[in-house]
Amino acid sequence: MRRGVKIVLVSMGFAVAIGALSGLVDVTPQGLVGATWYGWPFAWRYVIVYPGLPVSYDFMNFLLDVIAWFILIVAIGGFSL
Image (cartoon, rainbow, N blue to C red):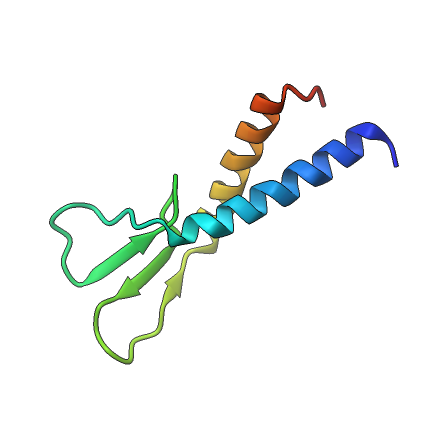
């Protein structure tokens, strides 16, 4: 496998993993009552604080989260694509 392709795949794997782990980070805005937001830098998992209601996911924000982490990983790693 070519080095560039391998770097992209490994970076994307790390970005997806970090994005998924960011779903554990509480980013609820102050003053918001009744819901808890998770995900950083973009909130993509919303938990309504009422028994029996399902957790909702915003997959577009998750995708933006993964893209942001991918760009950051590539920038910090100094990889040249």
